[in-house]
Amino acid sequence: MGKEKIASVLFACSAAVLLLGAILYNFTPVVAPFVFSVGVLGIIVARVLTAYSGNDFRMKRFYWILYVGTMMYIVTAYFMFMHNQNWVIALLISAVIELIVSLRMPKQAKHSKQSK
Image 1 (cartoon, one colour):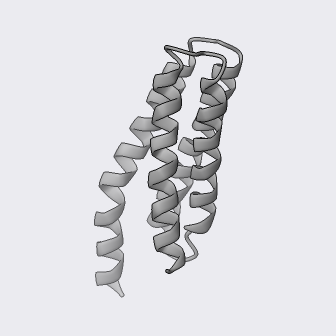
Image 2 (cartoon, rainbow, N blue to C red):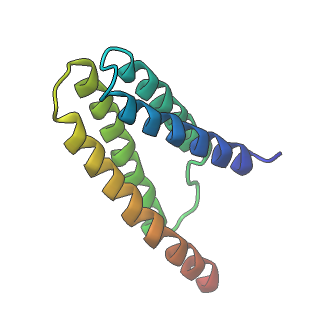
Image 3 (tube, rainbow, N blue to C red):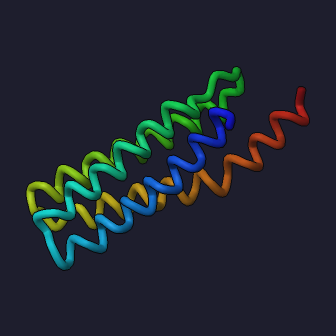
């Protein structure tokens, strides 16, 4: 199995654990930050495995935006551990970043390949 496939599976599993941690916070706020943090750790590893090494400036910018979104996951976990309700806002910001980049990045990648 290639590195991209492993990162894709890891990201999907980590996103599921992340979602589980966010839902679990309503029922057990003591355990949920730990579950959420495991998901965040998996997403960080997936991001490291899929680091962009090309020369296209726009693709590099998209990856940097994804890294900011990943940092927001870390902020969300911190807020969860502190039992601060702002974790919801931080998670929403991160989710919006993920959504926007995931919609724009494939189009830019296709455009980059056509330019070469």
